[in-house]
Image (cartoon, rainbow, N blue to C red; front, top):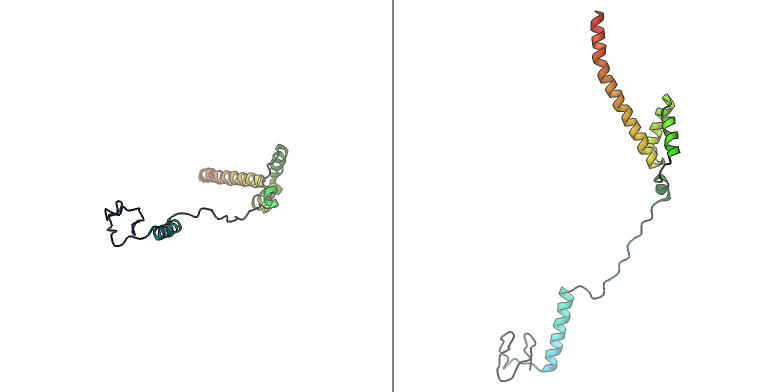
Length: 145
């Protein structure tokens, strides 16, 4: 006979389950019924607490980068850097080209970063020039009086 609570094999002369201590004298169930009940409990336990034995495959989307993004990320050669620098040194055209390169949408990322860096240096240089020229103009104007 088997214990109705835990499914353990029970000796007929003790009357108590050796595992859980349940009185099995009047509640003992036949072996076949105990095995089917135990199998159901095991299946329920597996379904409730354990992950599925065969993991389900969920296909993930594959993201392909745009070809324009790839062409914008190619490194510039030394010659391209030199030509960019020479064009940026031309007084008015160079400043306009730096603005186009810095804020254009289809410009190489390296050229865009270079143009932004040069513009930043220009802005800092102009600010420093104005900062130091104000005191000198004040000194010169006070000396003329």
